[in-house]
Image (tube, rainbow, N blue to C red):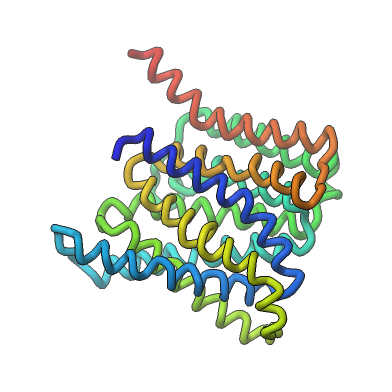
Length: 297
């Protein structure tokens, strides 16, 4: 697979996730946040595991170091759970549009996480891009940080965990040669963690609630879960983490579009300016190094 095809898969994943923000929000009309996550990723696991087993059966290269590999995949799953949990709970008090754009901050966080975890220093453009992104958050809040609600801060926290997930996937998926197995493992770990928290918190799960949230669970479990996150893992085998998150961040404008269509959400002129600033930061992270490299050649 060439890089263009990989990036196309990542862009498709971003579009599917954009609609997923609407489903995540409306699904909580019937279920609590953690029970929604638990059921959603149980469905995703059931959908993807047969393909993971097929992948292993068709592979011509045996997987070495199975123990360390599954441990690494499980670590990714824990980071995945933390990001999903913060995002899902955040949707209780923030808008779908805000959640979509603030989640996109993982574009800026990803290179920073790479520095912390692996001492992989980013291009100099990361620092001005971070300032532009913070300006975007300020405008998105209505021109006052006091206007940010708890859900916005949780969504920013989720973006940090998405960055950790993206960096670890980029680091480990190529070594394993099993992208679908990685996806299935992270879904299973996430589902188990969510079920544990659901039981600890005593969230009520009823058949009526499950039936009421069935369309959202099917969409987020099968498409935004099993399908889109698997596309992410496959795509990241053939492109850099920084470039991958640029295309994945397309979920932000898609989320705003779908929220306007389905929920009639409007974010106002300042909010639009904030969205543009965040998108500009995302583009700076990817395009400036590419232009500089092209100029050098």
